[in-house]
Length: 241
Image (cartoon, rainbow, N blue to C red; front, side, top):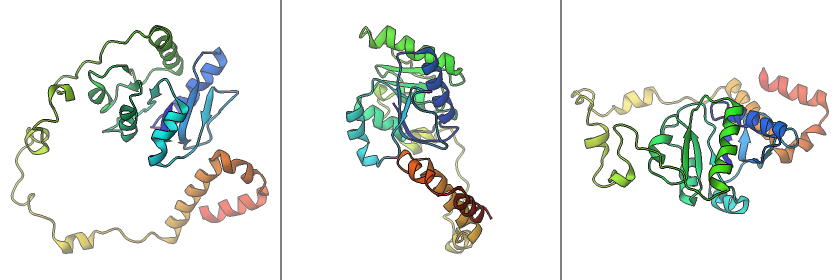
């Protein structure tokens, strides 16, 4: 299973490519996206991928229980500073495979049934890894070696949550703030720099993005196809103006 709204940097293109490779090879791996991509993603039968569409965060535990995935995969191509979808997987106890980017290695250190893989691996290499995990661990029940704690990082098992604070630990190596930097921002300064209401052009741009996203959802794709093409073009041209 792959979770969330996938942009290019979240790994939408990589997910599609690996699912297509799995279909070409007839590999015993099936992908389910609980969420959606930034564009239409190739699905069955040309890719061993099923896209389930958007979900409410509160429904995610129930959806995972319904789907019963063997593994949660994070195909991100850009560093994550935390990843709330990873938190959801950890809470459900799912095995996890992530790239060696950002906070993944730190958060998965010493966690059973977790793997870190090279982020820039090719689709073929990612699929080879998934098939290998299936054959070596999931088919045999043999647990993998624990991910080591990255240099300079303490894991939760080392007591990071006991007495740890941003002021004394996270910010310990930063120089002290000057008196000017430590002074709260004045209300007049904040008022002068507050966000302005979006212009009509910006509003149309946001509306166009929303329409494109809705159009890509499986439930609305059939409805969209029934709208005459000249009407679709007129609406798109107006929103793009």
